[in-house]
Length: 300
Image (cartoon, rainbow, N blue to C red; front, side, top):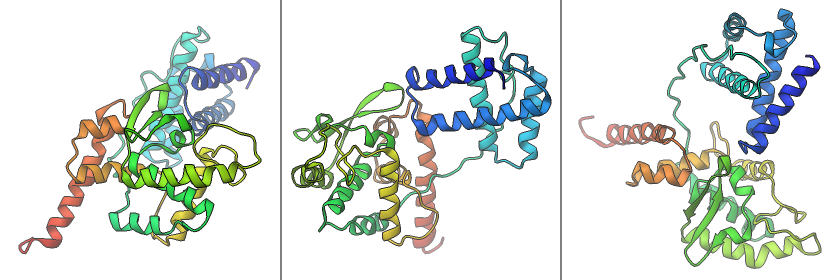
């Protein structure tokens, strides 16, 4: 890529960081998708982003399908490049958006995986409550399950964001949007125990800061650190199947809906901008009801 292209990508990434406030995890996908498109441009002899036309965009999508990528992956890459060119148009660096008319494939409904209540009990028991780090891990797990917050949101929590009088937490979500989320008695007790008897010990003799969760060296716990801890807890619990830390967020939403919570409330708690993002969990609850019916009705 030429200098023009490099500067364009740099400006776009800066825009995602500063104006859109996207996480490094999300930005990483944007970088990867643009880099992949740049390789395609090189192969086609296209020397700059402003030289790309609608035909080139269609050809690129055809190339993606030839790689046997999932529809969701193709849709994400198209969406990324459409956003990239929308930014370049805004900055008057290109004259048209070649991806604006490219049709995105419809992704099939993919039901989010979640933990059953018995599995959650096993996860909590996997935290060694006799050690400082075990108590920290329990507080972390309790808070994530109690609130359904994202891993990236969890790592940004400050001590002052907790209100123990009302058992609520101020969460800073995507796009600098803030929301208050309540937490229950189990998370309350675990957090109180962690703050009063663990956090200060882990930070003893270290540089002081106001982040709620700290690592073994007393520094702020990063999103990667949170994922590492959760992965270790899941591994220690010896649960089987395909498991990832984001399942705690899915579990929070699914358990609320299974126990009668209305969807609008769950949407607000999750920090979803659109109700459609929350509606996927209705598929989970319907499947749960169907399995319960088939397993227990005498004429099922």
